[in-house]
Image (cartoon, rainbow, N blue to C red):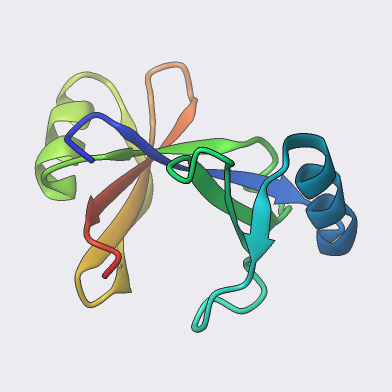
Length: 119
């Protein structure tokens, strides 16, 4: 994936079992927990490219969130803030080679940022 590509979509759910069955049946998604990410089943669309996760619904996470691949989270955050965005969640590691963060655009929409590899 390249800078600017949508890489992942998280969907907040209140019942993981119901949501897993719903999305698997409705869209044919393959949904499974990955080692190290227990409690966060990840889905892959039939095209084998599109994917995301089912995350527990919380007060701060009530709407689906897209994650965009960026070359540098730090540079993207600086550019976003200069254009009126705020940081909703600071950069945090996913693995030794990948990180994520969340910004709120000037309208308050949360957009996830992803940097690195998932290898």
